[in-house]
Image (cartoon, rainbow, N blue to C red; front, top):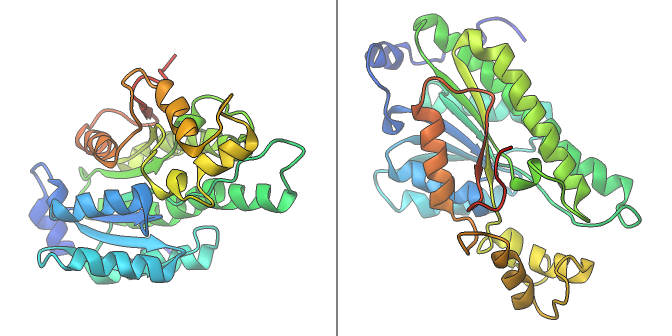
Length: 295
């Protein structure tokens, strides 16, 4: 990539005005991938409600456009929607460029795009395995690569400025998951990228961390009656003795010491912590209700 590719469209006045004081969420520019639904949509909506400028990006172009329209009903929301395939480098470049052109920069990348297909070794096709890896692992690489270029250039205008790359990972990135190895493997790999990027990008003031939520049982990934994880896990026998989708839900709730699934506001609190603190990078922050604890 050419050096200083974004310098001509970065809003230098914004950076100058923010020098020397704590930068609130409302003053920051975010990209949230996977923003058409689930955690991604919830995170984007929460940030927009706080006054942040947010690029909502997703492969589901119609879905993310609908999500943008929903948020724009609030006259104060500053959001745009962009179609993106995070596994395609040109598509990722376009997402970054569109964000900088529209808002004048990029302060925080929240990489939430991900796919999951349960299945054991005999059942998993190479096509499904490679697709999961491309979105969950390679996608984070591409988004981090191109987002960090903007952040490095902004740092040239303010040598004390800090930026954040945040991967929305999973508790499956902290421990193995039976009959779910493709997803868990991509998430374990994601934490390896987080730690490695943290070392590489520290000199540029870019913090790189992962948030590892527990199960979002109310989100469409779990609750879709035909394709959701309740259905997949019932069919795969992952909840012993379960006969219904409600049985599967009860089984997964019983595994959490605090007795419920993870919610969007739990993840948003963790994101705010990661951004606000100035002295942590390369971390995987569990938000699991005690189901998975750091060792």
